[in-house]
Length: 391
Ligand code: UD1
Image (tube, rainbow, N blue to C red):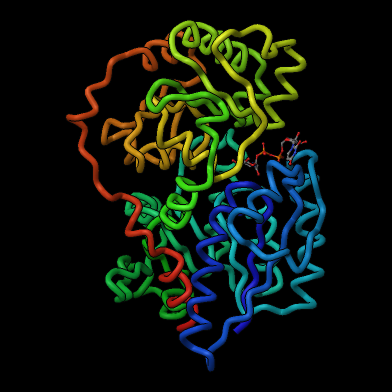
């Protein structure tokens, strides 16, 4: 069996690592049922700190193809990727194309494959913020609806897909068709409806695989002279916060106030950097806030684990904060990771200066917060492969 993974942006390299491991494990145990895994990089992220370092740290092999698309408007970037991915998929003819998350690379990979009638597996399916102004939300909806198997990271993601009419849900290894209408109307549509399964979050696999090595290898706390639980960690890169200059100004003003107390560490995404330059905001405006280049995954894990609180608009970091049981303040108006909010570990505050400051400086009684394993058992990669091989 031949499968192809299409990736292009930083979080996808992290999600890819456990999948590669699962394929290697499968091939070791099943030499007669070998999986050939083709890696296609769209080139959406290209800077060393956004790209190469992740391949190096996570032991991801060189991609077989790099489409070298780079940056551009939403439509241009996605279009270029589709065009170039199509050529390769036509030539390589994989049985399955695997796409990860919700970026333009994910959408392009899914569309290119679906139009060539190649089956699409979406990893991290079913997430919804119900905010169509986010490019990622449009991507999620479209990707899910052109995929053939939907690997959800959580139960709430499965529920979202049920609401959108997906009926074939795999539960405990058994396929349950939940919508009697579909079943009765046409046996064919019932059979062709994509399968939905909660395998857990593959980013949790990645975290478990990497944490031990990160603990040994990362020297970021020493380099930045940080003491555990004595600093706040910030990341901002969403279009809604970087393209809207007022939002970014509000956030930076809040960080100015917060950094009068504890140290603030802010690895700056290239997109954010561009807007900060336009606003003439730089390191010299702050005393205890450190703006640094984007950091590696291992360094990020160590910074996350030891932070007092996390302030972010990233999706992945909200989950990672939860897993490390570090309170998170989400600088967005909504989130897909509703479990983290419902359990009290995550507070959604938007780009509202007052709310960012108040929630960061508030004393949270984290001892009384509950913690449940919403993100599975860290074995999503293996489950994905074993299901795919049966197809
Ligand atoms: C993308 C994803 C987002 C994901 C994020 C992770 C989409 C719509 N968005 O956003 O969901 O959370 O990646 O980082 O796909 N740039 C560089 N160097 C790089 C990469 C980007 O300078 O290596 C600059 C580009 O010039 C561009 C900006 O960053 O101006 C945005 O890059 P892009 O890849 O389009 O989107 P992200 O904001 O990174």
